[in-house]
Amino acid sequence: MTIGEKIKKYRTFNGLTQAELGKMVGLSGDRIRQYENNVRTPKDGKLFEIADALGVNALALSEPDLDNTNSIMHILFELEEQYGLRIDKADNSYTLSFSQDDKKLDTNWLINGINDWIRKRNELQPDINDSSSTITKKKRDYIIWKARYPYHFGEQMKESQLILQEFHDRNHELLSDNHNPVNTFSEFYKYFLALTNTGLAISVIYDSNSPDDIRIQIDQDMLFNSSEDVIKTYMEFVRAFSDIQKAGMSCLSFSCKAEDDKLYVFFCFTNNQMITLLSHFKSQKEKWDSEIIDESTYEADIEDTLRMYNIPIKDYI
Image (tube, rainbow, N blue to C red; front, side, top):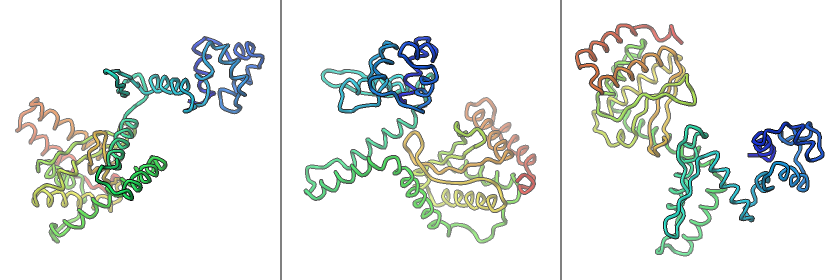
């Protein structure tokens, strides 16, 4: 939080208006508004006056100072309030942990960052058998990684994408030359259904940050270690996906890590018809997996869906 945000936080906590706080410290309400909007920054002496009027320590309003133990404590307090930081003691050790709380901001991005940090720290931790030059290089690489964070995420994603592209190029020969481009939603759906029958770990998920986005998620490690028949079915699906892209559908594919720190291949769609189709599949598959519907009902629904979506993709671009 900025100094201005902190002033506003404790002012509203105390039930004061900007004018009331300004009067308490010899300022106008407009000057307090400027502080809270970060248009102006109070000098140290005035910040102490404001803190005293609000009944808080000036460190609670100040910029973090990592050379000041009390300032570090206020940083920890802020992490507790905003991200659910919890501190536990066991014997002579202390552990800091973050937990998901629906009353606080989403901590997934923070958890992912910490996982990246742990992994990189372990990777670059000097080993007893390392030469002095290797130790020096590891220490330098670790400093650079931290200084560049989070730019490394883009590099990881680029690396993952290159690995996926190499996998596609290597297995392109499995495809038959006898192929008619996909023209209807039903034709694409058949390739998708064939892929779901291979035993691969496949999910249809919604992007919580983008309600108009639906994704097919495939476990990349499982895919890469599959049999040739499974990989061939996957490559046929990729070719069908390429067909609908060429037809003008807004969709993309990429490889990256998800919240569980595993690599997945994603196929993302924003087309309303495709979102409806895949949402229907997700709903019916969940009912089938939960034995709410039997096999004959499930298969009959698939046939109905294929008939219903036997419509040209180009008409819905």
